[in-house]
Image 1 (spheres, one colour):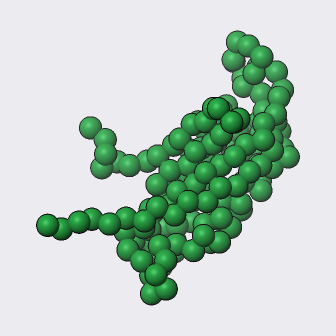
Image 2: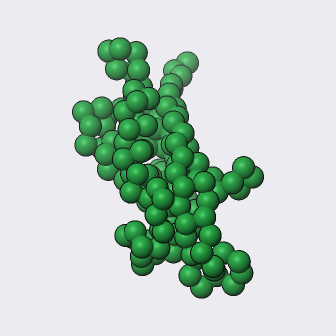
Length: 137
């Protein structure tokens, strides 16, 4: 029996921002802020010569490169959120795609890919974003 093995490399970072949900009927239509927590998972199908799927520091560094542009900002003024509503869903997709692009440019792209990004707006609320075309249907 053949067993498929994967390694989920997970890092967490935080950033603080304000936003306005345009067109939302309620309190979130007014400017408000969150201490966002971002959980990133990259999936490796094999290990490198050191026995790592992906160095935690590399994944965290790439994640913080993206979130640094969002930290202590009014998200509605930061592209693409100047045109797209800065919802947790859209934030998760934005971070995911930025990381997917960075990972695909690495030599390990044949064995490591983005798996998911979860954006937490608080202790009890979050959204998880994934792009897995082979899972559709």
